[in-house]
Image (cartoon, rainbow, N blue to C red; front, side, top):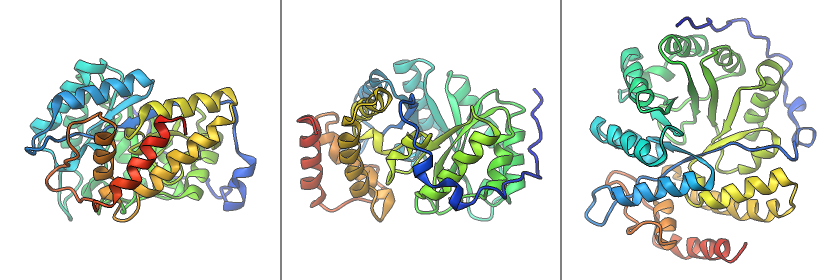
Length: 331
């Protein structure tokens, strides 16, 4: 397969903050495409609770969201290869081929880009019918913008369809957000159908939406901004960890927006309250809040997390319990 080489002369000079003011870009009635990065649950003994995981995947798919596995919410950085493959097999057995998955490469600071390792990770996902999400790594984010986009073009020579990923350093130490020229070059890779954007910055995402509309309207700008989930109002779709807390409520919210129902705002506000609480510093500890929340709702048997994951204080439980109650009672 031949991939088009990304342009290194992308004109993004017209994309200025004044041109991306949200008041001019709200898009009522649009159909929102939601992808939900599911939590990998652990039992009291510290082992993965596979039956609970299967149930979470099924609930996500039944709600109408696309399950995303082996993402940050699924502790992908902390899993060995055998477990990552078991996650893929589980996803396929539960939801068929309608899932996306992180193509993760474990490396260290100073390592060069491991192209073959990325191709192997993507092939494992594609062999099970999923769509790879090219997860950042030390080697990949050490590249400058043109070479970063060029690395994705190279992956497109062996992959028909994948999703890019900009992940900020507040999530992982090797995270990096690129400039608009690099983003434009990524959009020139035809096999790249979209990119998750996790800078937690509205302005940077608005700029990407303007560029998308001008350059490639079919490209998915997948918000990863758990502090601004209303970015869907401006044209973003989403791939969120927050939606793992309550995928069915995210699906309801999305339908309300499509139908022009003002109930969207009340539900979105409550879900955003949950996001702002759970994704406070240190951000990676949101996964513990997810486990507590899902346990409170009876979705998993234990609020345990991966042994190496940061945890929240016990005082979080009361806040999460109140939010869960309000969701169940109709917000």
